Image 1 (tube, rainbow, N blue to C red):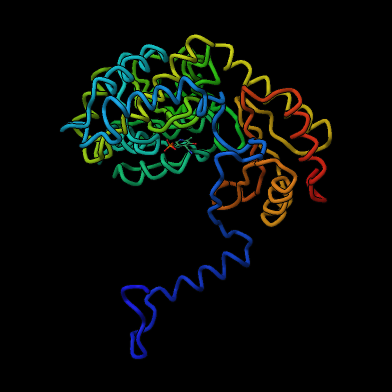
Image 2 (image 1 turned 180 degrees about the horizontal axis):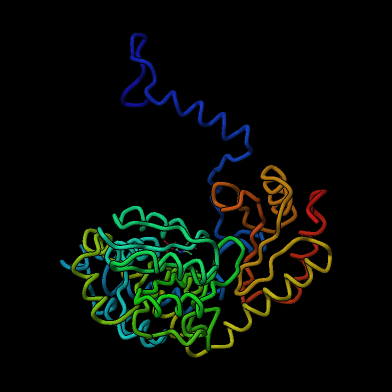
Length: 391
Ligand code: PMP
């Protein structure tokens, strides 16, 4: 029995407006619902962000369990109060070393990391130039930063250069390294040059590059020779290639100190749970020992893309481990994903408003631990269930 049961003379439902919004979503085929997965799911997973297959790796799980045993289930407080353990410090040191930056700061998610970097480096009077394909967390960072935000055309360094040149104050350019919808890479060299020419900072969200791009998975900035470069800051998530949870900002020590003192999503948030820090640290050490995992994820992506395009499906060339396949409509994408699931394959389904151009897609994750047989099975299911008009 709900505590507040509706009585006959109760006022009208204050949430009645949601009914209308729900009807509109239904009509547009854009309803989203949660579907709890079972731990022993028989589905072949091409939907998660577990690019290297490390989230259930015994070493990652042991790292998480050992951290919880030693430090407890929660961090117990904000990082500036009780929430910084020796484990957080160790993880920050090793992330910075691995990716080639002077210092790192761990936050409770990649989302919080992007908000922290953009708000702390932006601010009133500054200009933030943001690639139009950027992740929602960067978009929200721009909104929260109170800086003037200029959305620049996707992957266009010349447009970014012009936008930066038109402003005289402090400026930064922010971009995903690998765009999460189509899996295409940002023109980092061009963006870095545009920033150098103007004296602007470059902030790169390497959520989909860490563990996949660069030598042994050191990320897109390492691959571009920009790791540790002056004026360059990276943001990361620990929830994709590292199979855990959490986020980080990497950059010059001075920038990290500034974030510790000013970034609200760092200061007012409880520290990352020790289990998540321990899991990420174990996965990072595993990646150091087994650098071939990064190349394998890229190889699987190329295999998937090659087979799907050879069969006539429209798929953008993957620059990392995300393979995106276009669907004729949002409803068709949803049905396609459901048919795949019915046939034992879990795939992502991206529909508006998560896609910048309104084109719905299946989003496939090329995990490094997929076998040849699994890749063949996945491709067969996708082709067999493809809707008319998908090619
Ligand atoms: N940036 C990008 C590009 C992402 O794809 C994501 C995760 N969807 C995030 C940031 C947010 O990371 P987290 O899930 O750790 O909050």
